[in-house]
Length: 79
Image 1 (cartoon, rainbow, N blue to C red):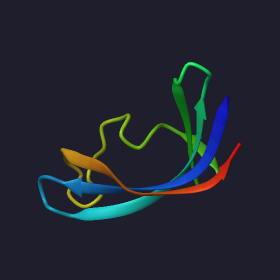
Image 2: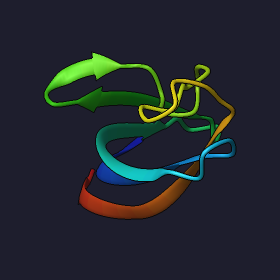
Image 3: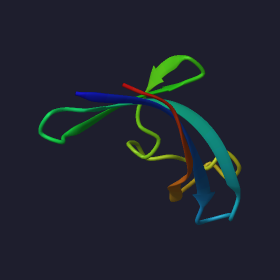
């Protein structure tokens, strides 16, 4: 089993009003012996859903759709 602690920055872009924000999440990625990956996310030290798991509303216009893309990934530790 391999585990990696990473920081992932996600870009949230509103298709309606065009506003864009970037937010950071901490993730624990665990790969089992068969190559299956499980991801556990936290933000601000608290567990949360994966950034793209739920429908996201724009903080500016309070509508959607909001496109979520991985902007950067930094590996902190690997075991």
